[in-house]
Length: 374
Ligand SMILES: *Cc1c(COP(=O)(O)O)cnc(C)c1O
Image 1 (cartoon, rainbow, N blue to C red):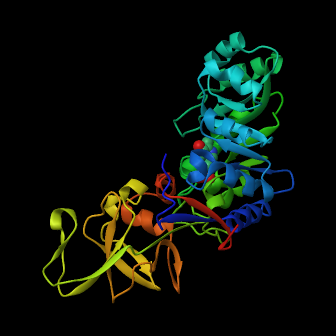
Image 2 (image 1 turned 135 degrees about the vertical axis):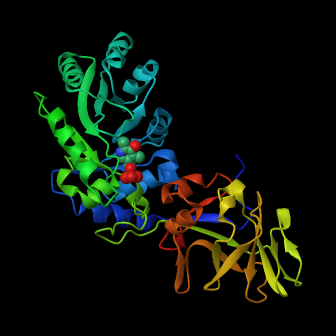
Image 3 (image 1 turned 120 degrees about the horizontal axis):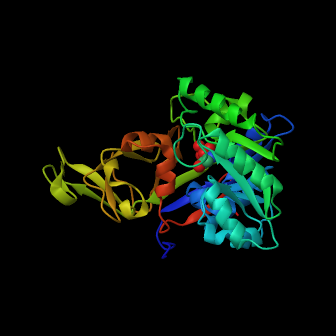
């Protein structure tokens, strides 16, 4: 993967914001609860190992990832905390997970039966996933769940470490479906003869708005990065500090005469003589093509993206002549104004998660402490 270090477009990630978000959330937990940092998908685009380290400094005691490779990357980086893989891992890697002390999610008995054939001395840590309404993975009926829990209790090959569920609507105003899921979860849990070490249900939204059902560990994801899981629907109980900015510079600037058009398809035509700046970033960086018509910040002013966004470049209308090298903020603050990942997401018709996950490896990630590069 080629990283564009000789180009001014970059993601700037504020370690202090990540630490503050984690600390603020931990301060809201009761004394018996732990915060596991969800750092899947390269830390939602922020860098998996870096993010994991910042959250650990702020008090996170474990990590959640989506796939086994992400867990192995954290182990390779020297992190020794509990790491839970939230998705289903192919049972053929059960031994690899056990050898690396990685906890796996299990959603049916057949997986456990097969793993029993593969595992040897080192026990595998297991969390049983319960499908209370997400419809994605996990046990749907109480009897098979009870059987699997009992099986884990009597087996030497497994360490029954956790049970959990995942909510489908924790970020919505209407709590009807959420409450139904809570009810179902409680019914599952009541069947256990012994509670495993971790009983967990909370993603960021659940912990922010339904803290009463947190269990004893939360899986805190999008909040780490300072993004609101509901977009602009629900207000966060504390100020989430955005951790990521997207910055660039003008690579070209010119006066365009009235009637001249801009970019592929000639979809934009200057209505008068206009200053047009070019920014060296495009959809190959994850700055989506559907953001045509949205804006960036230059010198504290919103400037409209005009014409189609290209693979590697795009054009903006600027109010006057600005020289090549002028700073451009695509996400972040400039003067009194700001553009959030949620603003970008709303314009693109998606959620903030997809925006930060979508920034590609061509963009360098620069880590700072409140703006000061380490
Ligand atoms: C991704 C994920 C999380 C974290 O969700 P956020 O909304 O980012 O807090 C928690 N639990 C599971 C099962 C997940 O897949």
